[in-house]
Length: 219
Image (cartoon, rainbow, N blue to C red; front, top):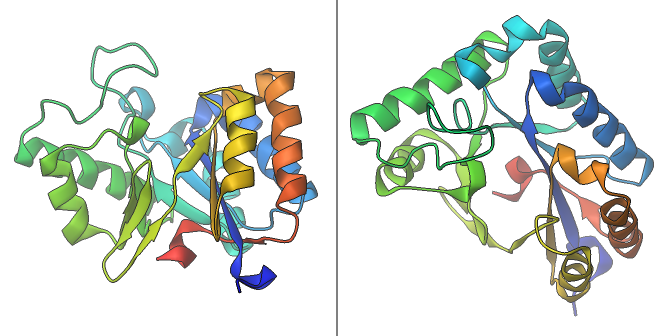
């Protein structure tokens, strides 16, 4: 029989960058108020090809503070979209060969390192992976996440990521039916919609006996 301590919740905040910093900080505080004392922050290293910490040094300081309090900081692509694509559109690594893929993720990791963060994991924007990207991540990171699982060097954690990109009712149903691990994806825009916030509050209330963990801890 699965005990309460074996049931976990892993919350990931996507699209952390200068343009969303204030909203992401509010979301993180809101989660803390609702019992989530650990989360995974997915940082876009260079939106618009500018290192994030040059635009918002306070964002870099906040990330380090969150990390010191138990959060995980992971790399979320490089600039989050293909050059020339509208914000939020396009699979960033589609069409890139192995050399270009390697250069892109290395540049993003270097930006994070310059900000004092050494990410152990990687999440591709929109979970859009290519064979070249999977190959690079398997050798260069301790873990990477897909829509359905977290892939580590020594183990995998299988669980679909629930997202409010679908209907709030579907998220609540998915959370109710989840097994030992509940994965929850949050985006800054989710908090523009009251129905999404109400559904999230219901999910967190139902998950009150679960232990909050980061993706780093899972793999």
